[in-house]
Image (cartoon, rainbow, N blue to C red; front, top):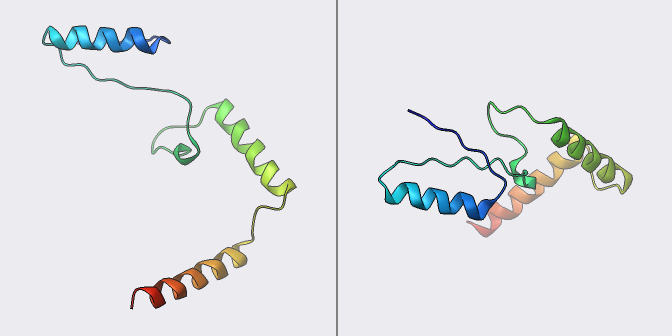
Length: 90
């Protein structure tokens, strides 16, 4: 049997999990908190509308302040990085 419980109070959730585990139950936790910068893509998980908007705003900010590069510039940067890495690791 499965039981799904949703709560916004993390302390109460931790207390409940602790109690259930002391009674011998197996407990799995899924935290669907806000995504961090490095978590934008999870396989099989579609982005929410809010995440799409946040990503679009971030892209607009990058373009506004010129913090982006073309494919060719990125490729050149990678090649330079690899040359330096090879020198350091020979």
